[in-house]
Length: 206
Ligand code: FES
Ligand code: FES
Image (cartoon, rainbow, N blue to C red; front, side, top):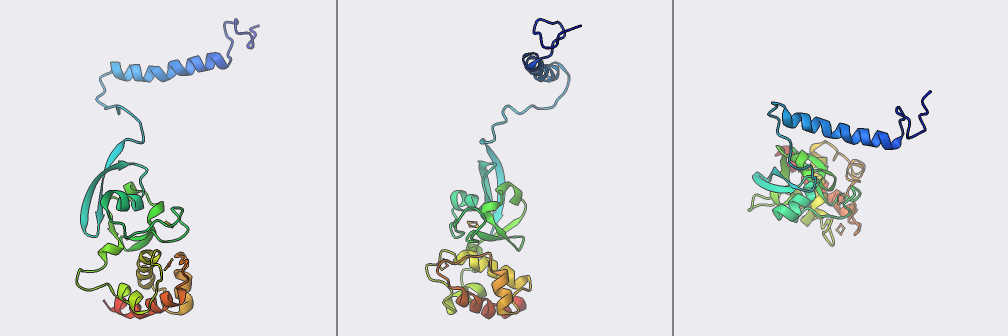
């Protein structure tokens, strides 16, 4: 009877023989592909850090980039496109400072891969004004003094626009609940609620 624990045994199967077999098996398919008539192109490298091409449509303009596949929308906006209005507060989906709209829906850009945003319309704080007139929500934040340091404000405004369009600006409680993902360390919350209430009718009628 074969002793399967004896490395000298002809049918022994231990860790060393398994690894040797696995290595041989891994090489074989490559050799077979190289010899066969297939036309499949084998990537020259699998290095995930190599740049990949991506086109992001931001505020109506296409931006062609070559970026690390792990780049977030926030970093693509700030570091590659030069739109620094969207802020990086926590970079962990906790504060809302990075909120942008993708196809009109509010999204935390620090948690969204740029590759997944291809072929979608991204709107940032820079895209709200038409260059002559502020967006009603921007104007309302000014009128209601809805910020102090202003760091959270771009995210607050983007989120507030979506909050109104979602139909969640019908009461102070509603606004507070549906704006609760946007943190303001300056605690301008009462003024933010007032701004959302001011802008809502104009946004909904526009
Ligand atoms: Fe995205 Fe804080 S920076 S949630
Ligand atoms: Fe300062 Fe909101 S205005 S964090």
